[in-house]
Image (cartoon, rainbow, N blue to C red; front, side):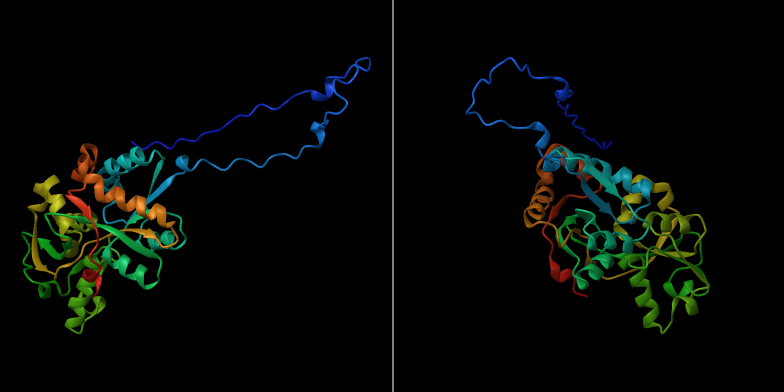
Length: 301
């Protein structure tokens, strides 16, 4: 588990100097020596915190629910802490927009964001992608439209007048893709579905469909595959009824105001993490093979 370590340096002062009277019968040791009156000294400003003890703040968008995020990312964050020899803070927010806001204000040092949030972020000039995860040899992902295995819903059109679960308003796979399907039918969420809900994470959307809260949902195919490895019985209750085209995978980003040398350090950390045993264990927890440099052309859509 990550530990937040605070250091408090207690510097003892020189006490009771005024109570130490000089002996008037003693001659000065050196009449030419400059005498410094301690009462006239200006207090020194506090020392700046040591850079190596500065907290590294890592934001993770709510692609997973908070508990799922902590379980999956803890090994990676621990390895980051050990490598940089600095405390690491995990920062989570309910929405992708809130994470973008933290990046815009420079309140986090590095962030895992979704593709839709990244597209919005580069439009506003608030973030830069440094690496992307490679999974099964690929750096792309898809949106899957899912429904329950035992339902009569077999196509997207069968979801008309049903309850549909989106993830986040800025999610590419969990919101923007199904919106494009509606747009191609000259429909809107309110005109096509009976009701829509926002779950604010892909695993919650998966559960919403499996538990009958929603008739269908749009989810990240990588999250669905990860869930299949961990909870195969849950995924057996679901079926995929439509797949999106391939999109650029969600990247790892830094705020644009981050110092260039720090940006380079983070980039090198991620690019080399697969070369160390502890790093490979951290990657395994996220079902990632390695991190590679991004192909920015994959985000031009």
